Image 1 (tube, rainbow, N blue to C red):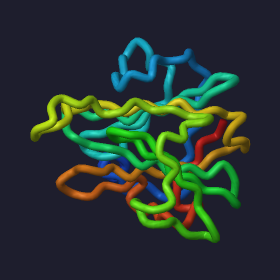
Image 2: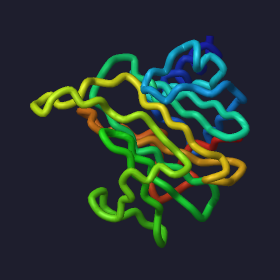
Image 3: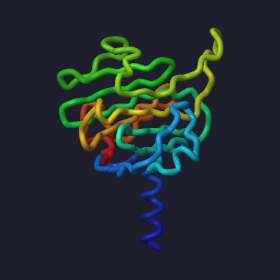
Length: 193
């Protein structure tokens, strides 16, 4: 009985985003996907899955050239994503996906404000799907269910990557893992490539 209770509590903690900093994902080899904002089950059946929160899951896979990540929601919403990535202990990137794509590199151990020092539309070595414009009036964008990233292994380098997810545009802030600190790579998820 105790064993079942322990497993149930562990499952709740994992699904709520309260994962320890030592969470490691062994990223399997898989087939390429179309980066279209649809985490099609047939395309992602060869991926590792990690629950990120009650309504979100993360999918990971790789091939020789790329790492693929899907942030998939159980229901449509207007979420956007800042994917934090560190390919080694010295470098950190933020890869922003919303109506536009942008990249920021950590400088001197700090991140700058969102409105400054971003290299908008710099997608050299990576891409993600963008939100779809619906109308010049509110609501301007169609709701989305998924965000997919394709990241060049050669561009970022490194054998094992650390990642953290900052969900934007939600009613309640969500960072995954829940104890993730934007300035501390060792609190992020380890991707074993």
